Length: 107
Image (cartoon, rainbow, N blue to C red):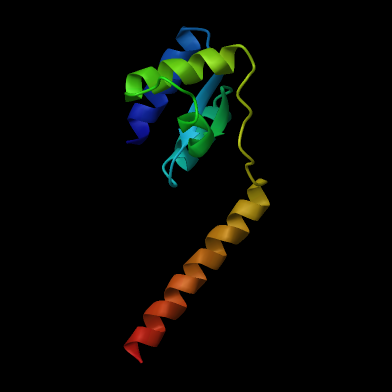
């Protein structure tokens, strides 16, 4: 929910966090990172495949702690995020592809 995202950002700012590292799984990260960036907290995305390559991580909590340690020490590189205009174009293209597929099913 939007209000919850804003509350998380407010809590991060209260804790004086300047950056947040997120594992990029699916499309769920998009609104979260955009919300962080809009409010002055840098969101860094980490490829899920790279995050899973760290040995000894078996639970989500251990994964989270490992990502935090690697991010703090600068050993985790962020995934590529397209510019805003490219993102708009990609979303429009995806939507058009869905509409064409639905129309061809109807025909």
